[in-house]
Image 1: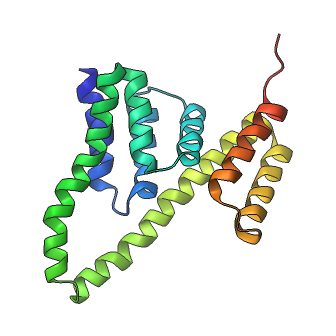
Image 2: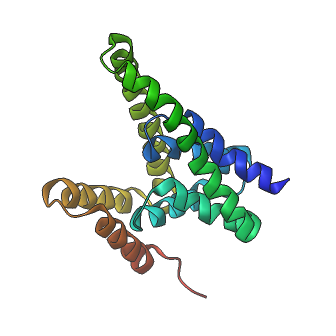
Length: 180
């Protein structure tokens, strides 16, 4: 049963997550945190941060890790396959259709309508992460990390992986609970 749940947890976001990895993250969060309860929002945030720090598509890395945690090596395989299968199937079918009708006003309208929806989903996920950060670390730490991250990413053009790595190190040094 766990393998079927792992499959569904990553196949469904892959099917309805128009826009690639970033668009599927809120959907994966819903499945993993809220529907199946395999991890908390904090744990999901940590897996997301780690996945962002590594090269390659984030959804497959998360599927592999979460699948492994829940079902071992077979669970990792099922999670990765479930993440890739919708894209593969839809790419073959839909791209042939979209290519035929690429100049159609309806196809252009579809893309223009879906983009804001994805932005809203990512925005809501960001708000949840900021709320969690505030509750766990306080406003000062949260605001500091937001400002520094923005500065490094937008003004200094530092690669996101280095910003995430820096935030992980900062958290380990300054936000880790004292050891007993």
